[in-house]
Amino acid sequence: TYRHAPPQAAMKVSESQARILEVLVVTFAVVSLFGSSFIIFCNVVLKRRGKYFQLIFWLSFSDILWEILTLVVVGMPPDNTTRCQTVGALVTLLSLPPILWTTCISAHLYITIFVRKLKTDRVF
Image (cartoon, rainbow, N blue to C red; front, side, top):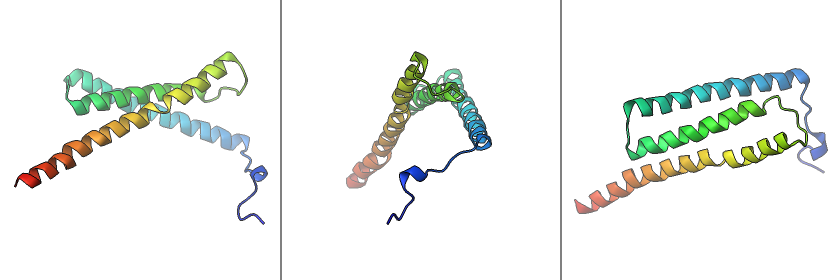
């Protein structure tokens, strides 16, 4: 008595649905690529060198690498070639840095805003 469908009853994706998903993935990857490129361009042109700007720069850089890899992966046939294994290793390695940079930004904002605010509240 399963409450959920058993694993072998996975939903099949038709060819047209797979194509729609590929178009969506490519569209969102390109939009994200342009957004991250714009952030890096603005950071270089405006020459902001604060801690927040550096963190956002590296987050955007790692996002650009991820989106380029996403564009490479879409439409690549799943086989056991060296190219496929290399892309698989890169997907594994490049999926973690944006999460880590976002965590660094969050921790830095928390320390800057809340911890310093607590210290100033104690003084007054």
